[in-house]
Amino acid sequence: MLAPFATHPDQTRGRLVAEDQSLHRSPFQRDRDRIIHSGAFRRLKHKTQVFIAHEGDYFRTRLTHSIEVAQVARTIAGALQLNVDLAEAVALAHDLGHPPFGHAGEDVLADLMAPFGGFDHNAQAVKIVTNLERRYAPFDGLNLTWETLEGIAKHNGPVAQPWPDALARYNTQHDLHLHSFAGPEAQVAALADDIAYNHHDLQDGLRAGLFTADDLMDLPILADCFAQVDRLYPNTDTKRRHHEALRRFFGRLVEDVIATTSENIALLAPKSVEDIRGATAPVARFSPILWSNLKVIRAFLFERMYRAPGVARMRELACDATAALFQHYLAMPQDLPAEWLGTDEPPARAVCDYIAGMTDRYALQAYAQIKPDAQIPDDPYRLPLSAVGN
Image 1: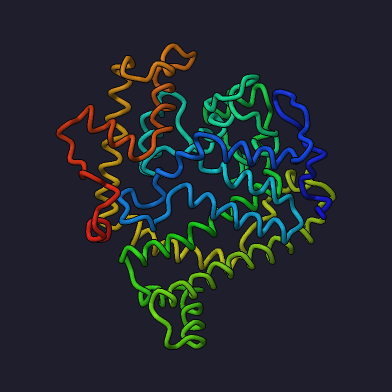
Image 2: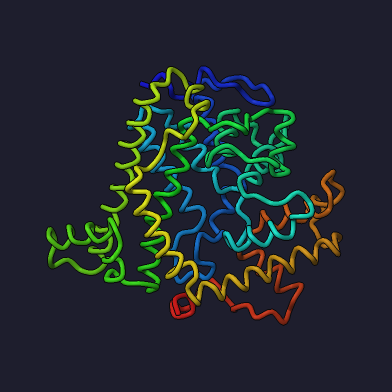
């Protein structure tokens, strides 16, 4: 049963190109399936989450991260009687626009594209699902519903002007109401993203040896989680201790969002999804206390993980590779694949779109071709942990 303020599939605003309804799937289930079958979704397998250089197959990629976000979004949406299929679709698509090398690649592209309309990964995700995926005969993109596109574009809140190039152009033909909040399912997907990466970055950081459980004992929430595990399982091994503590941390975040969002909905008393879009603040939120504690944890991760020397060295390589590829293809567009030539896009935008679609591995291979003397590890996905953590 969906709440009155949930997004009801029979009330969808539809697709840019009209299609017959599926006999067996709701519009949002159909959106989810198209996202999963897209090339951009598959490429997330080889795109950085935090670590560019992986040791083994244990660290998260954008693909495994997106799957975890979708699981959290379904759980929270179900508890709040929201549309779990829409929440899942937005969660699965939320990182489709990330370029190779994670935020390092995005920062470089944003700087390089500043004179040409900028670069934003949420806007790029919209461009991918509305234009760059080209497999269906009647239309470019995936022809997703208005509600899913809205969620991808503004799950983090209203989009400030000037709007990113891709969003501004698409919005002229299919108004996504970028000035307002998204529906509740997209808001839930955004918080599911926060929950997933806070949880798995701690897990990956422990596995990489960037910090220890003792380091986490000084942090809010985590200290209590480890203490609880030590009381219940005093003789458990290190691996199980870490897992039990972090799954309790994970559960605290999920339960806090459900409780806080339920309270916000009760105060707002929305009669429809439009009441949530038109509110003055998002309804899906962490409690103030938990959000304050999360800031402390994020500061710790920033210092000990995201700016760890080994990670920083790989970030430098990522920045060099991204900038070199951009300048090379802009100067020598004939080196672009044939399908990227002769489009209506300005040259810089075509180059940006091409690079943004690369995986880490492909980008490093292309970089090695244009700069043979570049110091690239023979297999950057098999570096020893010492190269990542020290």
